[in-house]
Length: 249
Image (tube, rainbow, N blue to C red; front, side, top):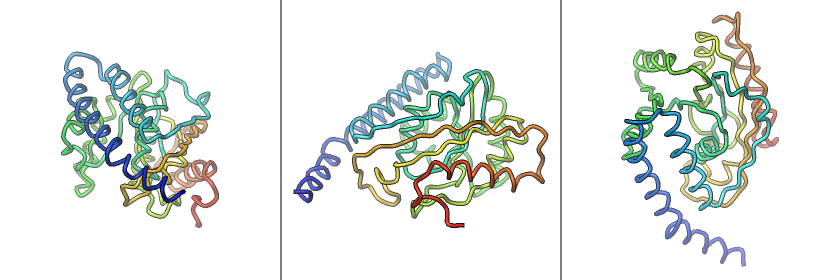
């Protein structure tokens, strides 16, 4: 019986979910680009990106629960540091975080039809990871956008976990926080790796969980504090992961 249900779901993802996700992304991507010409990016993100994420999560289906909302002050800007288990982390964060933020995303995503244009119009930050100077210039240009509760979100591992365990954190998010003086808001994404495992296109229904931790202040910290700060935030993110997803080091 389970084999029959798995087969039926595979057919469903090809015949229903796949086309729905593709069409909704293309249509809303173009709509985002148009609306961003006349409306503030924050409003466009709220009225387009959030419904897009929830709409596609519904068709997986993916249930999302969030804890720790009391740790967010909507009037403050943060450097959001989150782990990265799966592509559907994007749906969970966009659809349920309820924080206005700019993504830091790899340059290659700009070439995706509609999605790349829409993200660029909303002010998301594309970085060329093969060119350190260009990446730093993109990050520095983004600092001016972080005002009145607009935050910036980094997947601190730099890429998705390949084995489901929390990976090593990169320095970029933490340098950015120290340079801007913005507090770090650690977030743990759990359960998404089983909904869409890395290196596959095999979706499964599931429950994603976002845990928003108390902010970590960086006032007074410098370059020499980076290792300790990175370790502290990584430990916080790991604390809300199931044992099998925590780092072994």
